[in-house]
Figure 1 (cartoon, rainbow, N blue to C red):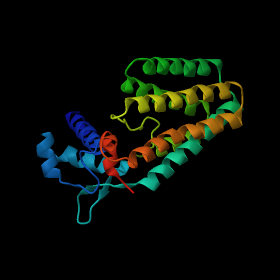
Figure 2: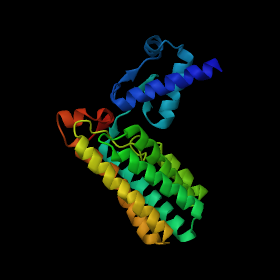
Figure 3: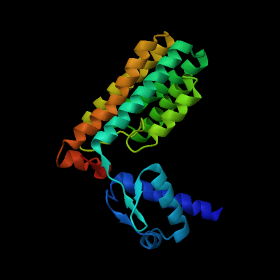
Figure 4: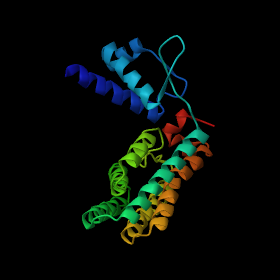
Length: 239
């Protein structure tokens, strides 16, 4: 049990450092140094590195060891586009197949909670992220397709592809507020289209919704100085 706890702690710590940009693309990782730094034995460090390689955040280096992976911007954008296609299909399935009143009520309750997270002077990003993730999970469940759910789960596990993997533009809170508010209005529109059994409309809005993440990444990668500095995960992106 203790070994599992240490392995999970190592995994969480290393994953966060990569996504925060503390370990930039191309950085070589050494078990001994990481074990000493995190005060964890080499065995859980080795397990964590292997898991991160499976997640696609690390590449196995020639001669052994691991290197933090650099992600090409076009590949990231394609992955987000693919998520939009899959979630659009989920929204269409939900509208065409019909969903229960209980499912619609649950989704609308999440929408209302997101309203509250966005209503304050400062955005509650942690709460928004959790609720946004919950909304997208409900959308997949409403599609009633195990095959589609598996594919969406696979795609959203990739860096930047998760519905809540938006980049926090710390230098421009007003822009972030507008960005999240516009995306949230699409949440409401998707549920309305599903409730009205409008499959094509639900699919179109869901696909457009995924492009909010795409547009945010494109915007930030074109910036210099403080705007880009406010989004450290961009450190693992290359053009």
